[in-house]
Image (cartoon, rainbow, N blue to C red):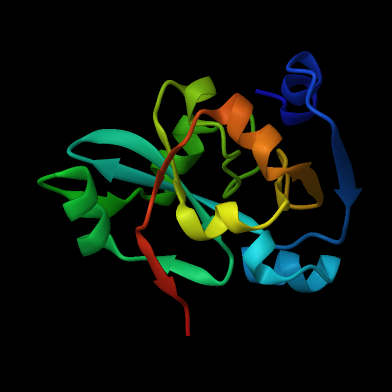
Amino acid sequence: MNVREYLQTQCVPFEIWPHEPTYTAQHLAQELDVPGINVAKTVLLNVDNEFCLAVLPATHQISLPKLKERLHAKTVHLATEEEVARVFPDCELGVAPPFGDEYGMPTLVDESLTQDEHIVFEGNSHDEAVYVKYEDYAHVAHPRVESFTMHAG
């Protein structure tokens, strides 16, 4: 998928913010001078042998036991780098757009990400960020909102 084209076809207002390449959501927040709570990182998970996207603030980390409990799953683990590359061949290595539906998988959003009006996330590359209203993102992504993170640090 091309994130720009997808948002345009969905009539979602957004801005593209080019920047120096970054490889973590926290570095993206620093590069853009945006609070980390507003920067969404996308993590590919394997939940009972099915892929699932978890979207959470840069300032948080996934609690796998909490997520396992919330999903009533037997197993939950982070996908490997090879799995990420296979699932997202249209993106630079390590980039995962936060739109699971477009890749045939569910999207989970941590409730802490829903608290602010706007979010920022990587587009299809490490040098392009997308700035959008959270409600517009949620309208097209159809995420399941859960509490599955803890503050990083």
